[in-house]
Length: 507
Image 1 (cartoon, rainbow, N blue to C red):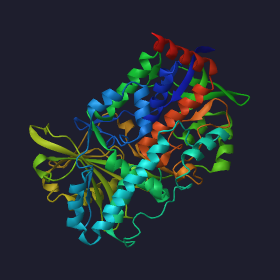
Image 2: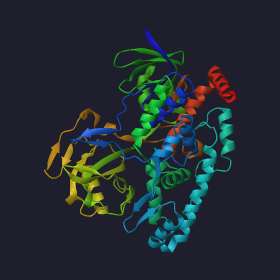
Image 3: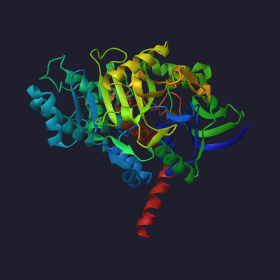
């Protein structure tokens, strides 16, 4: 028995799911967003709360992000809460350390100090990044669907990207540097952490967009990701939508190739819907569909099945505030002598000042690496700590607590040599790591993967597979495409919205 009906049901409270739900709710659709097992941004362990991952907003440069926030009437609030990073980030190489900033004179001095022999080439590189960022911005300003699928969508994208390389493999912007030059890793490392694509598959254009996002689009949000999440939830609920974080779908009902509704896990409630948007991985979606997702199997046969090749492993270290070097930036990238090693590339986030632990001033260091294995993660904790000690001298002397939500271990109290209890142990372990996928076939500009539409009518893929090479910007782009497809398919509702807009203008 069907208990209720929604115009759109969104599976997952990730950023993509909440953006899609908020846009559709704003456009007059009755939306239900289900948690589908998504874990909250913070977790409790060892008497403290920790973020599950480091977070810096990386889409402040993006026209599509501004367009989405503007439609949701969040742009002004965002501007009041966002502050540009200064410096944008810091790079710690084995023999060089420098800040990357948007101020040309300061950046020039940093490059002159560390790379005097190739300073001109590096300045030309940054000028090239600015130019190519502008070229891509002109594409993102258009009302496009990424990746395109219909004839009209492909024609619109072809016109918008006529001035860009079709596959994203632009010429090497660092061609003047030797292949082993350390600055190449200074570019590749931030780009790898700005993408949801396996770094080995990131095209040149996608790598430049990722580096440019850190350089020109990084911003510190007051309230962080939690503010952005709560603002989107508020937009959904005030527009007659609903968010059920603890609810998930047990099965999806399909009749004659058309999605009809879902059955919820906890109460067995059946809910019908006009459209279903899967904001998580397409691989997990298959088990919810009849015949083990045979329809998605057809899609994978045509475009290949995404494969999780790497995972984001996060480690927290709570240290006495005096241990933090004075010049350490909020965002830093550590590159080791062997960048291809598991801890050869590390993203390091420095937590805010003002925190205490047992009345001792402390700072939180959050390190992230892209691991190729989800097994034997316990040993990774020690290797990563040793890597951090290379960048922060005497780190172990000031170390208080160490924890990772991914390796199955508890919180290490370094002073006493004991393991502290954790809350909700079921929310920890290797399964909580975020995967980075490899796509056998990539589409537009080399940064897109699976299409939004599926062989099943009314089922859309609004998750990480649509534009994985664009990272957070790709989340906004995917949500915009999902909302556009659904809204354009409902001509009656689109007509009513246009009439309402003209009525407001007349008033």
